[in-house]
Length: 510
Image (cartoon, rainbow, N blue to C red; front, top):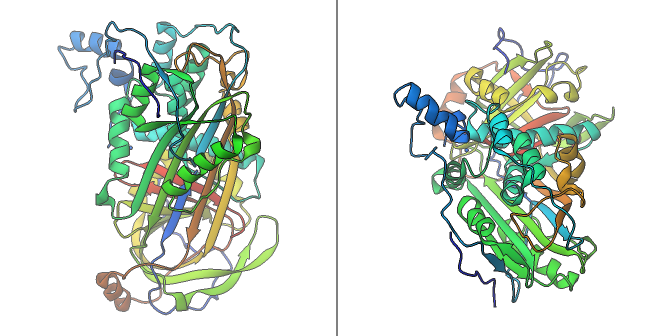
């Protein structure tokens, strides 16, 4: 028997043209024409709606509308007024019966400690107002992706010479699920860091997710969220229904008293949602049979084929200069084609090169950035990159015929997000004496013990046909500039219609 639900109510300015090849890199032989389409398969275990004051602070919007004769209303289908909670009987969802599957991406283990410890309810309207005043006129998808970028920046500070890969969209999704279950100061910390209230922009988040996974993308993107709950654990109905509405989050019951069987169920779900690319994200040692109550899971899967092919015969071993000072011989993809690229700088005038490699559906692109000078460390430019910076790249890059040399690589990263989140001000949810998840359950005190994300990305030559138009253009020109990715770089996989960053990473050694 599955879960039962009791009756309930409801960047920088573009500089003059500069050479895209690092200084001293002139002698690489040209490649033969185009090369193969590279599918990038990346699993991880935003339409342009504005998360402005009218959406997140509806009262302020109404007052403004009265003063301006209605001008304060937000345009579009999003209802920005206050959602009035109907008088409803508080219900609870009880999980029982067999488990339904398993999960990937970012996961959290919420443990029950003592039945009667005090949970302060401190989240007041005044707090909401002060938080909302910071949010005006930021695109929602920009805020969502910036959550993950902030976490990424914290991780690379601690691992400057490691390969790091995360899914910003996955991180934002799981924090969104937690925000819906939090109350008091715990909720305030989540909302302040995320800079939006999930309840205030739920319809827009749902629409963004629908666009990201749309078949119009041509490239494959799947997003799945799930809650795995202990058999018999009672959850508040509003938490379950709202997560289903906004995040399409399913609820599955498992027997955590048998950690091995519980892990099998969760990992099978993960394997299914990531098409087998990630087969395990949780081990029996991660589960405390007596205390674990919930495991929240997000899975993001992406597989794309390059619009312009990289031919396998052009892949050759070339030197890659690692962050550790060593030189590695790695397979390098090579092709001569038309790409949008450019050179820009940080506010303190550290120059770096950028290039966009579109996937064949043209809805999703890989963006690569690396310092122009080999003496500039990657860590010097990463802190200056945000969704706003990336948006400026998209408007300043220029299409040109360029010879691209790019490492063929696979990167797998399992990252503990607990310390990065604490560094960003989300602390109470990890403290069993302070965590307040009263909107998940009022029968037990819960806190988050782990926030883990496992991500894998593969970049190779495999792909479908190249565009005939691109090939024709290649024949017509000569003496192209070079874009050589032979030292540490940062990449982003971006859903262009919404600006959502699905994946990002730093590669120090392919």
